Structure formats: C-alpha cells, structure tokens
Amino acid sequence: MAERDQAVQRIPGILRDTGWTVVLVGEEQSGKLAQVTAGLRREPDPSGSGKLITSGFSYWGLESTVAWAHACNDLYYPVMRESIGSFSRRLRAVADRLPAGPLHYVSLGPGTGQKDQALLRYLDRQGRTGYYIPVDVSAEMLRLGQREALEHLHVPPADVLPVQLDFSLPANLDRLSTLVRRVVGDEPVVYSLLGNTLANFDSDTPLLTLLAEKLLRPQDRFLLEVASTAGQDEQAARAAAQEYENSPRFREFVTSALMQYTDLQIDLNSLTCEGLVEDDRALLVRVVYRNRTGGTLELTLPDRSTVLFPDQDTIRLYLSRKYTRAGLAKMLVDARVSKAGETHEVGHTAFDRPAFGLALLLLQGGEAVPGPATGPNPFRD
Image: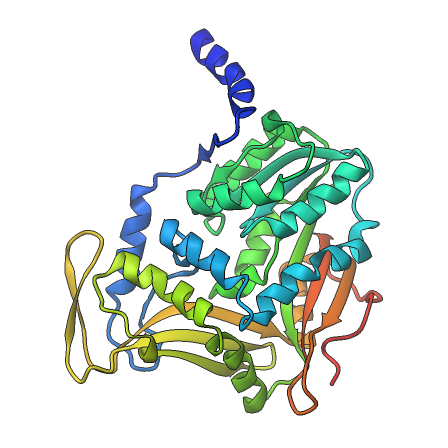
C-alpha cells in the first residue's frame, strides 16, 4: 500500500512533461464490445428502428474521435461551429448564477474541449478554479478534449482527473458520484452536458432524471445545452435533417463507427438523414444506413461472429433532437430540476426556414418553476 501511495504521489511531477495523460478507467472496457454487437444483431427493420450503434459508441475509438473533430470544423456543418463559437458569450449570460467561491467542474462528454476551456478560463480569471474532471466513454475523446480545454490555462496537473466511464448507466453514476465527493468534499460542483448531447439518447428524460438524482447536491449546479425549435411540423423536421445531410465531414464521422465495428463496404449514398415530429416535444433527426444493394449482405462483428443485413434493412447510426418550448419545460419537470439561470439564442435562418436555436440552462435540484429568460426566444417564430 505504501509503495502504491508513493507511486501515485509521483504522478503530478510526471504530468508536468508534455505528452502524458493519466486516465481513471471506471469500468470494464471489454463489455462495451458486447453492447455494440448486441445492437447490430437486432432484427431487420426497414423503418430504421432495428439495428443500431448507440450514442456513446459513435465517438468510441480513434477513428471516430478524429472524424468528430473534423466535423466540428466543417463549413457545411454550421450548427456545431456556431454552437462552439458562441458558447463563451452565452456562458457569460448565466455565469453570475454559479455558486460563489472555488468551483469544481465535472464535464460529462467534453467533446473537443473548446467549451470546457471557456468555462475553465472564466473560473481561472477569477481565481476560482478547482478540480477539472472530464468524463467520457472514449479514452481518445478524453485526451483530445483535455488537451484543448487546458491550453493556456493555469490548472495544476494534479487537479485534472479524466475518467473513462459510460455516464448513462446508474451503477457508473454511483461510482462517479462517490469519486467526486471524495475529491471535493462539501465544496460546490458544476456539472455539464453540452453540445445537445442529451438529445442523442433514446431515453433523454430518464437520463436527465438519473443524472440529477445521482449527482446533484443542493450546492451543485448542472449546465445543460440543448438545441431548440420554433417550428413543429414536417417542413421544420426536413430542415433539421438537412443540417446534417449537407455536411460531408459529418457523414464521414457518422459512418466511422460502422467502419470500425463491421466489415461493411461503406457507400455514403446509402446514408439517409430523416426528420420526424416527435409528438409536441421535439423534432427528431435519425441518421440511418440502408442496404440498397438489392441483396443480403453478411457483416462480420467485433467478436468475429456474423449477422445478415438484408436488402432495405437499416442500421441507425445517430439520433438527435431539437426541443420545443413545451417539450423542454416538461422534461425539466419530469426530471425534477429547476432553472437557476438560462439564455436562449436563435441561429441564422432564412426568411422561409424555421427558427432553430440553442438553449443554455443552469439547473439545480428541485421542482422546475417558471423564470425569466435571458436573450431572444428561439421558440418564437
């Protein structure tokens, strides 16, 4: 035990040399391949509701990480570029509602790290930076995000604790909560789920409920960023899907997981972005790969087993949403969280296109209650 403690104490000194990253691995990684395989073994379904690669695995691995970084800089993928470029400004609109004093930051899915850098820079300028704990299912995404987030900042290496963990699982959140509380004690934490990541999950409301229940104490806050829509009709749904369809880099990203987990010969013309109206709560965008060869293909999976991929069968590669005012409000009520601050921003739209935007919400535990919004209302035509 003493030798192990001595080794751990040497880590901060080692990390002062550039090029090293220490990651805490919070779960057995071999089990993740079984989850991928199970998703690809689902029954044939031409509607796009059968075979799938679930959210976290779209970013899992080196190829997917590199492809995502490229997609975020694609001129034809403005929704992500604008989200990153405007984040610092939108953050300032809610930052005065953050808890006072030293503040620890736990980033759930840090992505490219640029948004994390904006928050860490804000805290650094005020001398309030505590521990920085980025959490992601992908070790490669953690390394990418951490490098960008900490560039030009004064965060000691010993105060950075990357955690490789699937935060959508209850048992993993129990472990993460225990880790965070042992590290920070009773000091406040701000958690974040940015980049409309919540919308990538089938069970978005249950996930937000789970995160609030497992992680949030009265002194903590949760920074949630989601995409929004004023339109709620078929035309708006088609426009939402087109945002993804127009980006070559996004198409490369979304098929990178399929290339990694199967031996399928990718045909980008077989990729379809479908826009749907999800009741009155959101516009749903589903990206599917459809077998258009006219025959049945045989796919080899990560465990070397095979599965048939019939003609017109589909594999869902990506899921996203743009939330309506009513849908977002109901989700907060159902998740038993309330708004401590918020800002809404409408993106650039043509006169004949629906108004899409971004909402940045600072949440706390407790029932949701109405409050004044900061900035323009993206839910208004």
